[in-house]
Image 1: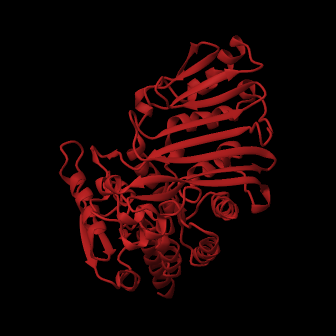
Image 2: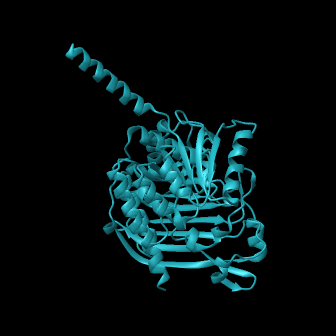
Image 3: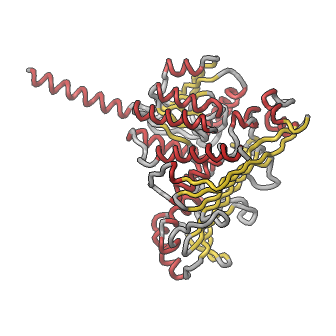
Length: 446
């Protein structure tokens, strides 16, 4: 009899454990001040409940977020079915932690508060998917270190949204760096002629989901959004680490700085009003006034450093608007046999394209070695383009920037199902934010 009860109890325990492992995911959204908070809900996911609990202060940021979700629910093609259960009040953070109505928290908003949110959520034992940047200065970096330690102690995941890893040209560029028959060995470079160079150009005025993007007024305040070195630069540092040292655990000691610089983008009141709807500069931007009608937004920066001896230069730029096209990305990684270059200019019709530029590589060697990559990515091909080769990429691989947010969430949910990130992810996230915040500190000393 005792044996039967014991076996029955064990069976119940096993069933409960299986149930716990297959329990649907429920999202929580906290203070969604950035449109990225909505983009992770641009699609639906298996095993994720349709009800999302939103906690935020009352205001325009919240209303804009809810409008974006509603646009996904009501679109003609592939509509979603999200149901936003909203709590709004000044105690939104405390309420979220007390109620804990969900097991995956999405944070994308004011970066001045974000690191505190992350730490509090980790202390509450909630899994966190945070938009970049997860910290914007050296003080925040110390707090982020603490958050990762707490997340580990409480057995929850903390992960940032790195959409550029989903862009097919960067994926193939990374693949090619790991093919010695094509790329050779990674050059070390010099500060003047780095082995890795990336430039990312963004625009304050642009379209998202088919409509002009409305930005919150605080987005132009670098004490709330973060400077260019601490914000967009996170993507560029991540790509450098992820591409040239894949699956390698890095440390802060691997980073050696040569220089770091910062400079502003001037923005007139009329330009500011067009993207925010505000008729005057708020008081918190008066510190940035160049004159009565123009503010200086320190959104631009450059870092020149070495990573494990590989000289790397990264540049993040913000212009007000584009005369044509949109955000652009340029990247070159130099190998002993070939350079791998991504261009997204007018010649490419502002679509990212990947080129292989041979240094010590014959056409037959390239074609033969490229067959291995073609077998992995069906449909890609090589086409002669002057003295270089264009990697032709089928449209099916070009899912687009907005879709990349859903692809990041897919990866995160897969990690959540295993309750484990790859071993290199956490240490490398810490190295990444050390690089950006330390570089900002250096740039401000000039």
